[in-house]
Every structure is written in structure tokens, then in C-alpha cells.
Length: 495
Image (cartoon, rainbow, N blue to C red; front, side, top):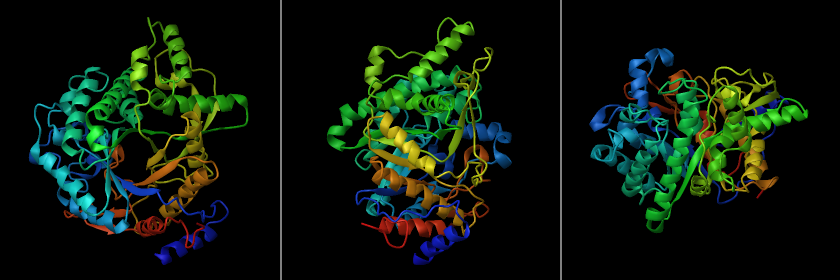
């Protein structure tokens, strides 16, 4: 372990002044470290033991050209059959928690609660049992992008009926697994589900309805989250004593200059990007950001719509939704610059036109294989913005990581973790932000959605050409293991 930390020091020296020295502050004793994965990205077994079809199965099988190299998650890391190997890797890392998601279709093949797949239930019960036996807490996401296909056939998330259908699913899951799971997240990155899935159509179910379908999707999904939270709070919390949140992701948007216009543009962009989902839940007043309400209403009127394309919450719904969280869960990876621009011309409705902000990345920073610039100070700034915007909540960072080509000696991933975690420490100790946990994305290389297997985020390498899906430890895993064991990014930390 010392060797990898020593290598880190050499790397920072050799790679120059663009890199900052890792913090020598020690993480608080109660700080929790973990890693994250998602069901469709690792499980495989896409049709095994009664599992139903989900929208990613459907996309991969009917439109393989939309995924790099026509890849799919049919086998992926084969964790459905090799989950004990995953538990061994987690145990070796020494993580406090493992963030994973449930495959809705594996538990409820049709999406509805009238048919429960016992083999799927058994799989997750065995996995949770193995985690608990090794002192690892499961952090479980109910929905990580893989809607059962029968529910898409009735319209998917833009259909308001899905709020109640999801609530039924949540109640079933809390009943089945709540004795083992104490940390629940309803949705992962709802912006990707709605904006990418029903807006621009780049992710499953690949529907293009920007400025309409994405807003209706979000409206249903936010209400679905609130229903699930209240079900847990009223029916299960008294005996299970767990917590519930939602994972909202964001890029940090830095003003491109010191001008008031660029500052306004950056704030507008993060409100449309993060506040869209966070405000109704985390803000004391609830509801969508006012800038979003005003701009979409204005543009809708000019486009000839009888009312705003952004659905409206009733006063009762606002009260029902706000405060439906026990901690704030954040995914974040990179930073973009935001520049003011004239409003887009009135014409075809779209989310981008509603925002009317120009964003771009600073090319002076190194880029990961995912195309995201490595800008560590953005981590500290987004944590501070959230802390101030949402009244100092407890924050758990549920995803953060670096993509490369899957090499075993992955120095750039080590540097990424060291620099981003340094900014987490600075947010905690210098700024007083209440960050209590961090999950690295990802435990192992996996299916990265439309990128297929062309980019790799894992702490462990997976040989996708081998039917055994052999896992091999990377240098970054050894480094992260040392960080977890010592709560320290370097050899010796200040207490």
C-alpha cells in the first residue's frame, strides 16, 4: 500500500504544477467510503430465471447501432452468477458501503406487483446477506434507468400513472428487503432518465420530445419519489429505521468570466440542470426553480401554447414533495464554463432553448476517456453551492470517478481520486460542508450505456472476452484501499 501512495507523490512531482498536492487532513472518523455499480451495467443474466425485459434490453436488441460496437448488457460482468466475486472484491477494498441498484424487471417481470419473481428476490437476498456478513452496508437504488418494457409500452415516465406503479414497486421492495437495507435511493440521475431518455433521445427508451416529454417525465418521477418516501416514512420507518433519498447529478457550471451576465448564465444553468429535480425535494419552499417556471412559461406563450410546457405542481403537491429526503445524494464528475448568450429564437420547443446558455469545457485541463475534463476544484464549488442553496444538508457523494481504457496501472485515476477527494476535504474542513460519505464509480469495468465497453471506470479490470469475466485488481484499487483503511490521501495525515 505504501508503494502506491509513494508513486502518487512521484506522479504529482513529474506531472507538474497543474496538479495540486493531496490534502494531508484526515477524514472524520464517521466518514464512510464506498463504491457504486448499477444492475443493468453489471448483472447480465438478462433473461435468466424469470427476469422480464427492460428498456435497455429492448434498445440493445432492436437498435444495436445506438450502442458502441453493438454492445449490450446481456452478460456484462455476469454478476448475477458471480456476485460472490464482487463481494470478495468489496471486502478486499475494505469499503463501508456498496451502492448498487435493483433490477425492477428481475423482481417484477411485468413491472406490476401481481407477479413477483422469487428467483430475483432470492438473488438480492443472498447478495445482501453476503454483504452484511462482511460488514458492508448496502446502499440500494430502486431505479437506475432500466424501466420494465411493459411500462414503457403504456408511455413510460411521461405517463402520470407510473407514479403510483412505482409506489407499488417501492412498497414491495421495502417489504422484501428492508430488514437488510437501511439506506435507500429512489432514483439515480433522473435528469438522464428524462432529458436523455425522453428529451434528446440519446438513452433508452430513445424518445425525442425535448421541452415536452422530458418535463412531463420529470413531473411524474418527482411525484413517484415523494410517494415512495411517504410510504417508507409511514409504513416501514418505525420498524426498519432506515433512510431514503434521491440521487440528483450535476456538472458544476463556472461563469466563463467575472461579468454579471456570465454569472447569471451559470446560475440559470445549474438551476435548470440540478434545481429542476433538487428544488422540489430539497428546497424549503419546494417547487421548480422560479427562473425555470418563468422562462418556460414565457417561451411557451410565445410559441403559441395555451399554457406552460412545464407542468405545474399544486400547492398540496408542493407540500407533499418538499422535504422528502433524509440525506442529499450527489453524483458529480466534471466542470463546464457557462457563458451568457442571447435567448434562442422562438421556434421548435426544446429544453436547450428554454435554458439559452452556452456551455463548454476548458481544454487546458486533461480529459478522461469519457470526454470529461478533470477539474477537481469544481467538486468543492458544487458542494458549497448545494450547502448554501439547500440549508446545509447532509451530503453523500454517491458517484465520482474517472474513465480510461481499462489499463491495470491507472495512475490518472489515482490522481483523479486524490485531487477530487482533496476538494471534498477542503469543503468539509475549510467551508463547513456536511459531507459524510463518498462512493467511487465504479467497483469494476462495466457496460457504460451507449459507450458500451469502450470506456472503463473500474477499480477492477474485467476481461469481457473471457467467459469467466475475470476480475483483476488495478493500482487505483490498491490506492483507494489504503485511503479507506487510513482515512488519509497520503502516507501520514494530520488528525
